[in-house]
Image (cartoon, rainbow, N blue to C red; front, side, top):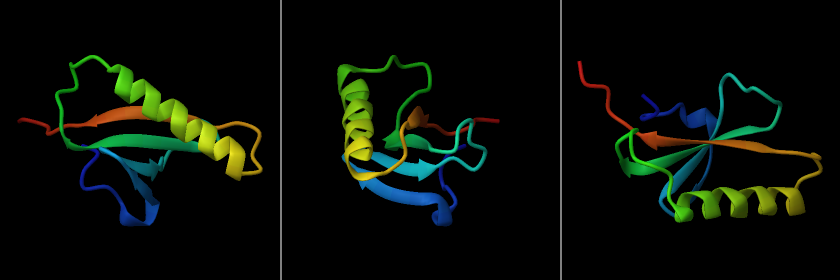
Amino acid sequence: MFRPFDKTMFVQEYGKYSLVLNKFPVFPNHLLMITTQFEPQTDHLTQSDIGAALDIIEQLKETETSPSWMTFYNRYYILHV
């Protein structure tokens, strides 16, 4: 479950997403985009989801010195046992 996430990893809110550093990054600059409200993991990504990811990457490229960034999109989900 991605919520509640470790508050020390929080970057910022971005619309309907929370941006959080990944505790176990695949690359040095690895963010998670987590929806702030529950959405089923089985739902498809929307144009809005992809657009937000592209916006965030563009902003990071303009403001940071790192040559590349990666973001993973994860819907906020609740594990049902």
